[in-house]
Length: 67
Image (cartoon, rainbow, N blue to C red; front, side):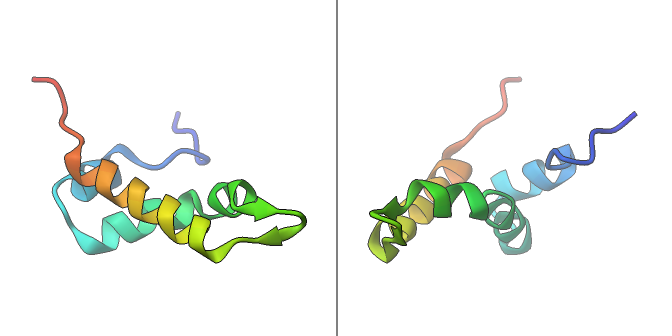
């Protein structure tokens, strides 16, 4: 049985392949966590949020599955 809280493997594969919709789906999945990490004195720091999203996107595109 599938855990509905996880990102489906197929979406991860497509994101690693560079498909924009899949990368966006991964970013949406982590959006709440990114906002939480971007909090500073009770407010969301937009620069930090943008940097975290860029870093996640970069990491997704660099990721390689072991063969």
